[in-house]
Image: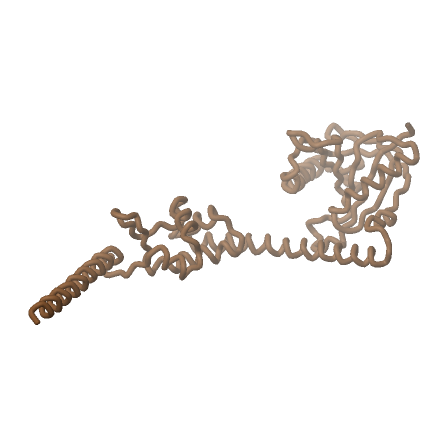
Length: 312
């Protein structure tokens, strides 16, 4: 009987010891995850709620995008506040729009101007997405057209048969022009910049425009300096501000639609030149019959492509 009582008391004290230890551990954990009465979330809990991996959260802390509110100095465990959940949701939302982490960090760090920066950035992103949609629709249209062509038993390259090449004689012209080497990615900006400069000269010296703007390509290949390109507008008068350009006999093709088809025109013209024993005699040039800045629909674009030639 005494032995049974002793064993029972020993078991009772053992249970009390375990409960006390468990309470102490829980109290310590609670102290570790509370700060000023604010309940904290472990990195695992935070990760699960926001559906972001712990590896990603550690990377965000490394680049200064989202720091944990508390890091336990004893074990290195990371804790986040409830208030940081909305910040993480904002990061995820902006990422879904295609914004880079650098762009997101710039917005989040500038708290005083956050709404203004975010508004500007979202508008820019919206414009990019709209252009991507237009490009995707154009690509889809081409794709479906090629599918239909193949289904009809024709070659996917049969569209080249519809590109007309004719031999024409082009009269001498006087050009107000700007010639420079331009990297491919800077072409859109240079178009606007150079034509504005040319129009300024034309207006200053009261010259008469006789044709639409044109671009002459003086190099046959790309270089580290970019494309050797000449932006020009033909005028009636010969003066110290103009240069003479006499292309003579040329292969001419009129392109209706997107500039992305220009390479097909060049291909067709070169094939025509080879078949008819012609070679290049001067810079290939393009005349923009329609101003791309005034045209929303690419199908409305009209471009004349000229390839100066001579007999080999």
